[in-house]
Image 1 (cartoon, rainbow, N blue to C red):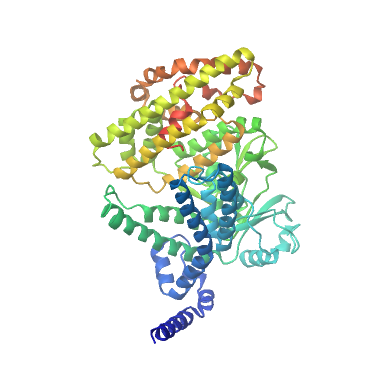
Image 2: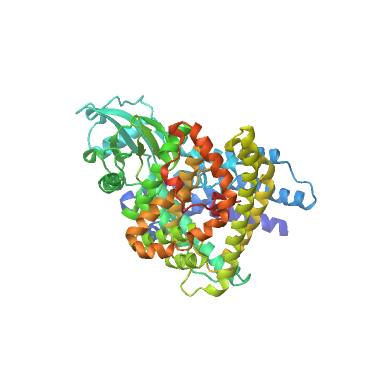
Length: 594
């Protein structure tokens, strides 16, 4: 009897759910796109989608049904790894790497199926090697330039709707059989010509139904972030005793969502292109180029700009990468520290090299503003980070809103200073070992590059263990103290990680902090004045003296190699700035390298 009643109740619930969701697609299609705001407004989104709960619940069910199988597999992997670790039968690295690659393929397929919002999320993960394994990074990077296209006929219909006339009257070499030369999460690009001038242009056309689809996903993500904040406040802080901190998850989502939703308005992207052309290019002496935009042919969903013939920087030769990355760093820091407005989506597909050897920036849909106060504090933090001034860095963190003003500095400084000192020691030991190997190898003529490889093979396990231990201690500090992430900082970090990732393909020893330091110093001198900057740097040489002996052998061998190295392979002059003797290992350790 009980089973029968349970079956009847289950059938009734299923029928009710079907009745609730039946017609959700028709209701979704009936929502007028004009009812949604042109800029991200979470309250307006909540009004629209709150009035159509069937559409929201239907999408939530779709996400759950598609994600559940992959989630179960990943959970089973995690549980299995834990059990094997407890019984001392861990899988080999080769097995784990092969499995990770296969799981990443499934995740990439899932994100592609779930649509543009999730593809964007996967693209963000693809530049976070600190979050996901290398095999997964490689697989998710395919989302940057391997998103399936949609029918050209649909694009032509949208162009006609947006421009108010037959595309054939404006564009040559654009037909229903034309294939896009690139397809991305939000749109696709065609190569064609303007009939009026015979100029070759890039025609960017938005995917259909982006505004409704993206706004609904962002509405659901915001509800999820609100639940995460509740969990942190009630469970992590209330029950488990984590440090009390200001809620930032919803604000972080709002920052990402606001910038991402603006990408759906190509008029905004055109304005960004013009702004950077007017403010940034004059600072860079012709070393960077931005395509010209045809504003008269640009609408919310169609963008026409100059065609650039070139290859991706990330796929260029090592010598080209080494020559242009310092320019890229200067370009980004000029945006960040001087212009106060930066291109926050410089994934590998958006950085090109043209026939003149210039660095070309494209795709200005995702840009972010940073006010003058944050720019000043960022400059100060970079200088203090390079000199290892922990107390000053804490004040910078307060100014940048990583920490509240009432944080207990007396309690925070000792463990944080301990982390820095431990990182210095690990770096000194690494350099001492590398210097000894280099000195021995120098007689045999092996060269620093080869010896570093030998040193890495011999000591990589030890150094990984050191860095992993330091990273765990740093994570514990973040848990115990009220650290939070300012909304704009996620976009800055994303851009920096992309630049460094490209640089490391050309030079495995590239150090972003060292490359950034000269421009930061020049900007700091303008910002703070020579006297205050001298005070900030007063202890730098004394602190760096600790590294001099261990670094001497490596520098000497590098000098010998430089004499034999072709000119185009040499690093830019700012690399040898004498204020930067501290090695890359220290900065990476401090930032939590695994």
